[in-house]
Length: 458
Image (tube, rainbow, N blue to C red; front, top):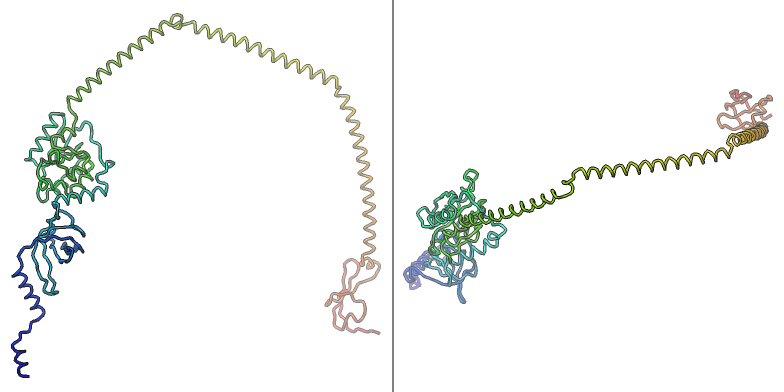
């Protein structure tokens, strides 16, 4: 028992925190301070704070990782699940949970440059949204009067653009808007300048904007691949020509812009016409117009000669005389036609008069009058006789009905007695009782009301 107590006294007891801290110290002492690890991203999460949490995996293991916001802001491409990457960082143990993870400081795609991958990701994203569609591209004016240039005021691109425009179309006025064309914040500055120019263009009256710079590496040109600049170009109401780098350089700005020039010099070629070409075209149009005018004058001259040689100009009154003769012919024809119509009408009237004379209407009217009077007399006699017969029939029926009327006997001194309570005719003493009220109906609608004092069946 004493031996066990002494062993417990010699054994040191650690807390959980102490153990995790010891492990952290051992890892820090025995592992390299910087590790470069290749793996496939899985379980990618970006917190609203900007910190990123994910894991790297290979065929057999998984390594938890974290990347703080400041380091992640330097990553040009968009990480995601399934993407193979190379990361550089150090192993750390989170003491409160006893979990270790790789704290990532840098991240690049495995097998492809980070900028190239970011470029391809941005192209796919904006193309899916329709920012490259031809239907959204604005036409360039054929003869611009004012052109704005957004580039570095110290770069060779400015002189290349200006010389190209002045050599081709000297009457164009140029306005420089100096902006940074590479480095942190360059894309935001160019986008802000585009928005500002559009906002003030009612006063500036710019017809075209040229945005560009000279050649350089992908890193140097990266500002023209930023999303903020692409959306500013797309939103511009002023047509924009993108002129970035050399022939082989293609940026997101080139794909979004209304027109792309492979070099700053060619931006001037795209923006304005060539004075010599315009003068040559004007000379050609002048010759064509002069030839067309001469041809037209020749045709008009021949037409005039034909008119002057016609009979109308040799004898101008001939047409009038022909019209007068035609009117005379029409007048004679009209007179003959009217006479024929009047003659036919006169003949029809005479025929009708003869028909009326043959009919002798006065005699026919007298005969019809006699017949009508005879019919009226016979009809009146028949109606009178019928009325008399019906009157006799009605009188006989009336006398018969009067004989059948029970009240007709009242005129001979008789009466009818009714029981007022029952409304029945009193025929025998038994139809009444003492106290009943009686109504006695006499001739001439006269009535006597009485009360039974005594009923004697006698």
